[in-house]
Length: 86
Ligand code: SF4
Ligand code: SF4
Image (cartoon, rainbow, N blue to C red; front, side, top):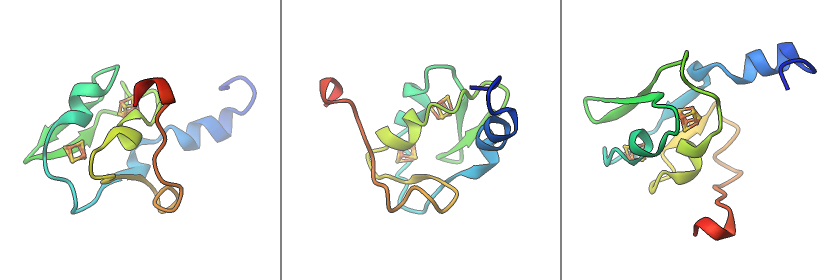
C-alpha cells in the first residue's frame, strides 16, 4: 500500500490519530492483543508506540468498551471481527 499511496498511508499510519475515550476501563486487552507490542498502558490507559504500530486497528475493533477511536471517523462505523474470531 505504501508504494501506491505513500502520502495516504503516511497520514493513516499516524498513531496520533488514535485516542482512547473515557469509557476505557483499563482492562489491558488492547495491549495484550496488539500483534506488534505497540501499546503500553500508562495510568490504566493505552498509549501508542508509533514506530511499532502497523495500523491494523485490532485494538480499536477488539476493545470491549469500543473506547479506542481513530479521529472522529470510527465511532459511527462500529466494530468488526471476522466471524471465525467471534
Ligand atoms: S481494551 Fe479498551 S477498555 Fe481495555 S484498556 Fe484497552 S482501551 Fe481500555
Ligand atoms: S493499530 Fe494494530 S498495531 Fe497499532 S496499536 Fe492497534 S493493534 Fe497494535
